[in-house]
Each structure stands twice: as structure tokens, then as C-alpha cells.
Image (cartoon, rainbow, N blue to C red; front, top):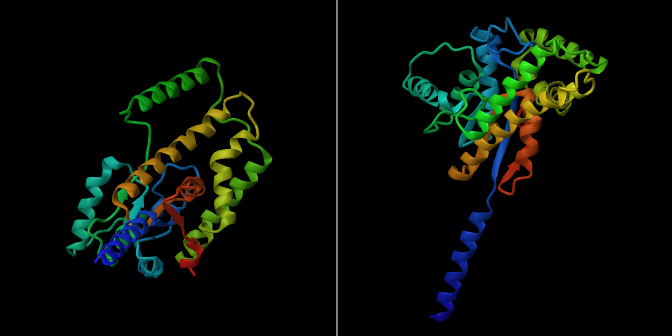
Length: 279
């Protein structure tokens, strides 16, 4: 009897310990902003994402991602937009026709429906405005001071760019221009390649440090990373609370390298190879 009791306790401990060691598998999907829906200087236009051809191509991409079987889908929109996307998902699941040329809907919501998830997408983006926390209010004040410094010292908005950055931006723009003509699966394979992710991190984060005529570019580089840090916090807090076995993160390609760097060192996270699922 004692032996059975000890064995039972041991098995229960093993099960609990195993569950506590389980990691959430995370697939990071780099995307471009469909339909030119972005304030970025470099954008894709004329992709006709609602046309029959692109809709078939989207279905092909979703079939690939469906094999991963995520339980959560994180997207590039602020948490204050969560109710909007919840209503979109509810309407779409009930059979209502929705025409949104947006990667959140076209990839995130449609993938959630294919998987019959209870909830559609989870909004985890971050911007300092509207400021809510003490940190955000202080940071907003700092931003105002920096802008005033530019005005007071007649510093132009456009600072000198290095030759490397100019060439990098030229290549990004050239690729963006041919995206409408490419198969979407090919586009996603290119966007999620290591080479492209490196290029986008350089262009959005570290390139401003190449040339710093007015000694201000460290601030702008940090500004972009502060957004990534807050996005990461929104993601990891939700993962640790909900404990999904698998999750997909759908974000613009300039964010993916930074988000992966934060996530891959967390003891509860295992990054999967996105390229393998896009083959």
C-alpha cells in the first residue's frame, strides 16, 4: 500500500513538473502592410489584395500556417482596438462578408476562423500616445522636449544618411514595387528570410547611428526599440497568463528581429523556424 502511495505521489510530481517546464512554441511571421495601410515612407501599393487572384494566394499562405496549429494569434494593433477586432471576428465567423484589405483580417482573422479559435486575434502593438502610465507620460514629455530642441536649434527633420542606408532603402523600395506582381507565398518566404530580417532591423534601428551630425540619432534609435520592448511585454504577459501551447505573431518585418531576440531567451518560449512552415 505504501509503495502504491509513493508511486502515485511520484507520478503526480512528474506530471506537474513536466507541465511547468513546457514551453510555448512561437512562430514569428514577418509581413508587409497590405493595401498600403501604413504611415511608413516605404510601402506597398497596388497589391489588389481583395482581387480573386490574391485571395487564392492568401488561402495558400493560411493553409501553410494552419499546419502549425496556433492557439493564439498576436497582431500589430493597439490593445484599445481589441473590441473592434473581436467584433470583426464574430461577424466573420457567423458568415458575414467582410472586405478589409488588411493583413490583420486577411491573415490573422482568417487563420483564426480556419482553426476555429474561440477568440480571433490579440492586439499587442504599442505607441506612446495616448500616454497612460507614469513612464509613458514622462516619455511623451521627453519627446516634446526633443521636438522643441529641433525647432529651437533649426535642425532639419531629415538628417544626412550614410551610403549604406541609402542603398538599403533603395533595395527595400525596389522589392516593395514588385510585391504586387509576385505570388504571396513567395513574398512571405522572402520577407521571413534571415537576410531580409537583418536588412529591416538595420534600416529601422541601427542605420541612424552610421551618421549623427546633430548628436541626436541615439535617441531615435532608442525610440524605435522602446516600441519593440513594449510590444514584447504585451506578448509575454499574455503568454505567461494564458499559457498557449503554440502562438503566431504577425508583425511588420522591421519588428521581427527585435521581438525574436527578446522571446528566444525566455525560459518559457521556444522559437520555431518560420521558413519551414512556408515551404
